[in-house]
Length: 351
Length: 235
Image 1 (cartoon, rainbow over the protein chains, first blue to last red):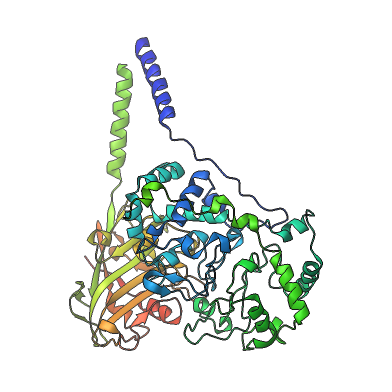
Image 2 (image 1 turned 90 degrees about the vertical axis):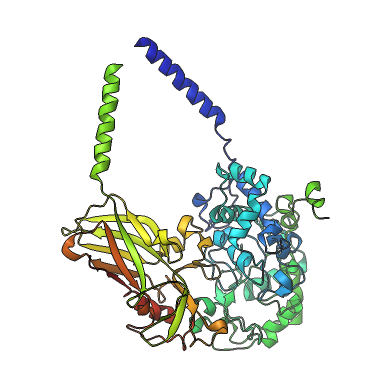
C-alpha cells in the first residue's frame, strides 16, 4: 500500500514537471501607451490583450499580399507609412484587376480612440474593419476561406499563430484580432504640436498665429488631441455624379444623414493629400477655397457653415503653417510599423 | 487498494446512471414551399403565382428555450445555430439535457445585437459563413436566393439578405411554437414554409422586389412575413 502511494506521488510529480517543460512560452504582454492628457481609448483591450507575438503576427498580415485575390495587394499597399498610412497622391486607391475604390483611403492612426470606421461609420469594431477591404470586389477581392487556405501553407504563420494564441489554429477572429493589435499601436502623438504642448518646443510666429485661428474656426469639429470629434457632418461637398455617395445615409437610411461623412483627424494632414472622402481636393489650397467659396449649402449641410467659412488669404497662410506642426515624423518612420524587408527566400521565389 | 477500486466502480456506475437519466431531444426543420418539399434548384411556385427555384436558404436560430407548464425554462442561451438547406446535418438541432415535458418552444430568428457589436465571432458566427455584412457591420439573419422568370435582374436572379439589429431597423424575431399535447417528441418536426416570405402580412412580388441587401424598410417587411414560417408538424 505504502509503496503504491509513493509510486503514485513520484509519477504525479514527474507528470507535472513534464507538462511544465512542455508548456508553450507565454506571449509577452504590451502595455498600451496612452499619451499624456489623452482620453481613455474606446477599444476593448480585455477582449484582445496586446502581446508582442500578436502584434508581429498582425504586422505580417498587414503587409501580406496573399490577403488579396491576386496576391499583390496588401493592406500596406493603400496604407503607406510615409503618407501616414493613406495612399500617397491618390484620390482613390487601386484595387484588384485595375479597379478603383470609391473612397479616399483614410490615414491609419489613433484607431484605439475610434468607435466606428470608414467614412460612413458603417463598421462598428476595429477587428471587423479589415474584412471590408479584403472581401470588396474592387479592393482586395479575396474570400476569407482562400486567405486561410493560403496562409496555412506558410510554416512561419503556423509558428506565429502558435506563439500568439497558444495553438496554430487560424480563423477569421484571430486574423482580425492580430491586425487590430498592429493597428492599435499606430499612435501618432509625437508631432511638433505635441512637443509644443508639452513645453519641449515652441511655435514659430506663423504657427502660433495659425493655432489661434485654428482654435477659433476649426477646433469645434477638429478638437485636440485627436483633431476630430468623430461625428458625421456635411461640409458642403456636392454629391459626385459618378460615385453617388450618400455617406452616412447609406448606413442609417436616414435622409437627415445624407451627404454626411466622418470628420477626419487633421493629424499628419500635410502628408495625406488629396483630401475629402473621394479625394477631390488635391491640395490644402483647394480645401480652403472650398470652405470659403465653393461649399454647397444644402438641407443637411452643417449649421456651423450657414455662412460658409470666412478665411482671408492671410489666415490661410497661418493655418497652413499651424497644420504642418501636426506632422509626426517619428510615427511615419517608426520601424515597428514599417514593411518588413522581404526575405531572400521570398525574393527568389518568383522567377 | 481494493477499497479504492470499489469506490471507483461505484463512481462509474453512478455516472453512467446519471447519463442514462438525461434524454436527448432534437428539432428537425423541414423546408417547404407550401406543401411541397424544398429541393434546391427544383421548380417551385409561390402563392403569388410566381415560379421560382431556390439556390440558397439559410438562417440563424439563437436563444432557444424550452418551457414547461410550470414556466420552467431550459435555455440554450449561448448556442447559435445556422440552419442551411444545403447542409442536411444543420437542419437537425440537438437539445441536450432535455426531457419531454415541455409545452412550448421559443427561439430568436437572428443574432442578438450583443454578438453583432463585439467583434469577430467564431464557429457558425464566423463572418466566413457568408452571413455577415462587412461594410455595414451586422449579421444577415436569413438568406434566400434563387431565380424566378419574373425577376428582371441578370439571370432572373433574386437575392434576399435580411438583417438589421439597430433601432428602427430591427428584424430580430422571437418565435414561439406551442408543442402539441404538451409533450416534446424525441425529434420535433418543424415545417419551415418559404412561401411566407412572399405572402402574409405583406405581399411581396419577386417581379417588383428581386433584391434586398441591407437593413431597412424592405427587410422589415420580409422579416414580418417570414416570422410566420415555422409551424409544428403534428406527429
